[in-house]
Length: 375
Image 1 (tube, rainbow, N blue to C red):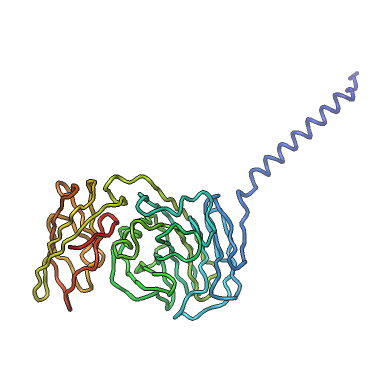
Image 2 (tube, rainbow, N blue to C red):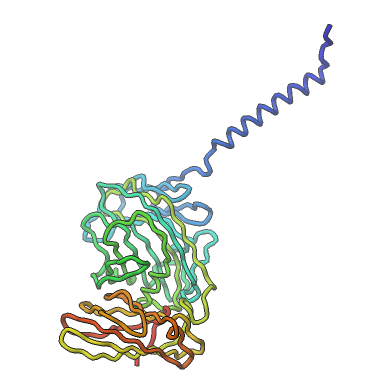
């Protein structure tokens, strides 16, 4: 005959079964629970944080119609985009995700604002999701200012148009083309009344790209629209819709700003310089001899001189330096025994080119991101 279990043993057995069941349920809940619930924002300037390091903002400022964005683990999507505005004016909003500071709203852990001269690189990557039936651009907004301000409007805005859909155009007027980040862009320059705007427009849609934001910052400095002692305040990516826009998405976004890693005298490090630009011009052609003098106290190693050729000019060959591309915003680079410029020393290079219309000289020069005086 089997003995009956004691009340204490029965209670322990029951507790064991209950604990085992609870552990199984907990495991199931853990394995199926989302990492972070999506957050929908419909407030005009509402925002939320993703990944503990970026801010997603609704940023509706050009219309009273409803706009909502849903922040995801890796980006955001536009879930409602009512209303429209004329395509010959400003867009209705800029739903976006950013690293840095925007009207006192700073992303967690950001090291922006940071002085341009202290930034060695600013790698960023983006993956966009596009839709039909809307008028919009997909664009980066990169803000620069003479001071490390975190409120209000900055002095210079760099826009990178990854996609343009519909009869819209950047602020200002086209000023030529430029090769930046290994791609060719149509360049527009102008002012919206509050700040200067330099826009780089892709000739065809770019769905995703990884690049260095500083390539565009240095191209802006070379054009005289910023200085190396200015500050980068934010790196933003999103959309400017004019009509509709529901379904547009930033599938993923990343932005890092590396500071303090520059090589003395190398790219991104402040230098002092003077440029002499001597030309010999004939009908339809010219040569230019350029002397770059280091007026600072440190050796410039790996020098790059940036300048913009006037419209209609094209380089056919060069000597003592590599000059690329052949037109628009160009960069001359020293190599081998010409790669260094000692304090008080200089390097001279030259090139031959063609031109149409009236001949003119470049308006300014920038050595490793710092504007030079001209002799």
